[in-house]
Every structure is written in C-alpha cells, then in structure tokens.
Image (cartoon, rainbow, N blue to C red):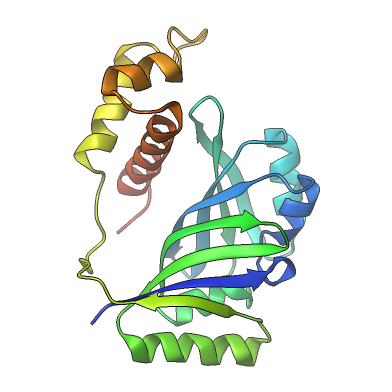
Length: 212
C-alpha cells in the first residue's frame, strides 16, 4: 500500500540551500522532480530575486549542468535546475528511494517535504539512505491514503485556469487582467487561483517538454 511521508530536513541538507541563502530567506516552493538521461531535474517556484541572479547562483554549483527560467505567472517564476550524475545529496536519495515529490517548500531553518513511496518498506529504505548520507531527516507523519500510483496529468481545474488566463490576456505584455479578476470569475481567492495556475503550468511543461 502506498505510504506518504511528511518530513523535515535541515536547511543545508538540500541542494537548493545555497540559493535560499542568496535570496536572503526568500520562499522557494518545489513543484516537480524529474529524472532523465542520468540527470536529476527539479522544478521550483521563486517569488524573489532576479532571474539572472537565481540562474547564476544555481550554476555556481559544480554539479548543476543547467539552470533556466521556464515561465512566470506574474508574481512567481518557475525555474528548472538540472544536476548531473555526480550529485549525491538529498535529491539522489529521493531518486534511489523511488520517492515521488508531492510537495516541498523552504521554511525557517530547513525544508519540508511530502513524499510518496510504494510501501512502508520503501519509507524505511529511504530513512536508511538518509542516515548513510548524513542527512538528518525528521519524519513528522506517515499515512496510507487511497492514492493513485500513476502520475496524474493536469486537472480540469488547472486547465481551465490556464485557458481563462490566456483568453483574458493575463500573459500579454502589458498584462490585460489581474489575478484578482480571474480568481473572482472562479469564485475563489487570489491565492487559490495563483496556485491552480502555477501547478497547471508546471504540469503542462512536464507533459510537453520532459520525456515520460
């Protein structure tokens, strides 16, 4: 049965810790973990710092092959950073454990993750790998919901959010509408619409750019 684990690790135990420091503690929200051609890519949203500074900070790592800004929803920008096969930190631990990244974000003094595993044995194997790698992982909660194992594509709500934003000129330069107006048309908050739009854009990029 699928197991989902909510965990916390110290700030310096994650590969994006250097970028987090460069942003003076600015918030980073993780979106996707993708493995392809022997490399590991992570997609994440940032609301602070310039694109150039963020890319420069990422590429300062000898293990980062490429970093780029993929898109923006106006208030947040979606970046992709790709690590080479020599990366041996927390990202490698997740990949070797076959963990699926469901959620993740920077917090004061660390990082919080929600990871999906095939079963409890996979969770135990992940914890063992963390110990061997020297990662101080704290498991806050483990639960076993009824949850589909296959990767889910973009939801209907996310697709509608993207189409509506496009049709109303949200992605135009200059912008023709605002998040508040778009959110009002769905009768949801600005924050809820922004999250729906961002997750939909990330799913669209994964479906159209990254190989399955």
